[in-house]
Length: 289
Image (cartoon, rainbow, N blue to C red; front, side):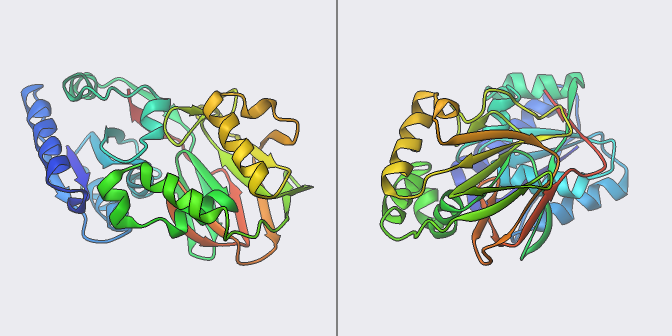
């Protein structure tokens, strides 16, 4: 078994990963830690592990971005993806109810139980990648692009709160033309989501689409500071889907070509600019639960 982690996560998280590997070994599994050295390296390491054909599981030790990178390297294989949630938000782990208790998580992985989910595929100015939870275009992507990496490591999710407050006064909220299964819609911001949760435990959509070859497309209809604050409060209260200017559609394809150079994020990482295309890949993922 290969455990892929980012050593830049800090000593505290490194200690947790080492302890988790001990739990796997106590459960009768052979496990080794492989450290990433740069962005995208997790994909390369996962692909190498698949090609070696020596493991039944690959564990992504990190947040949703790390999980997505590992998933990209595993695409098309029958290896099971395990998750050790040591990231900032860990939305997919919460979505799939992966235990945050490392002992129980190791036992579950050793037991071999898994579920099948369908990731999404994003094409942007940075190229093509898989995403496991969501893609944001517009305001939330702008926040991801400007958030301080150093501050994020120091104070976690609070760094996004500070970046959001600062962005409210700087972002211009341009209107986008969003093609959802070839039908055009106007929106101030868009989130394309495989899951029901967002930014941790907050409910974005009434239904998860993880097990389906579709995703939810959340269209925010009103631009501006006041509307953004209202959307944020509705998200915290769990009633975002009931806002009169929020539309949620089910789809298999989303395209945004107008305007160009809008910020894009997937699974909490900056992913270039528009134009974009989002659709479904050919193969599902097996994830330990």
